[in-house]
Image (tube, rainbow, N blue to C red):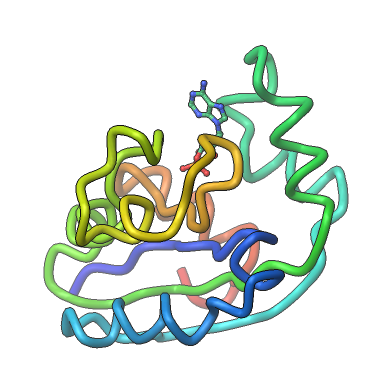
Length: 135
Ligand code: CMP
């Protein structure tokens, strides 16, 4: 069983879409192994998005991620990392196919509902930030 990290962003909590997104993950056959609702601070965001801190979009991303509560999760299942990325759809909702979370529910590259790890190394790094006992 593979584990990955996923984070439901402030647009998800603000639009009352937590259940909708978790239902899609569970219907796929993946399991929620850990779950925590919290409000991030600047340090959390800089740590989670360490690979992006110097990108031009980072200030807008940080402001958005501070704007409301998020739901951090460890998700478990066969091929969990790739299967979560498929469920999410492309980062840019205008590129994301219908049937994907972002394709169905988002219209903004920043406010795009969900983040999930893109590799085993990132999954381990991101899980360790929020669930240090789970890795
Ligand atoms: P996420 O999977 O959380 O990883 C980084 C986030 O930065 C990404 O989803 C987007 O929400 C956000 N972002 C905003 N602008 C861009 C951009 N131009 N390229 C990539 N990611 C972006």
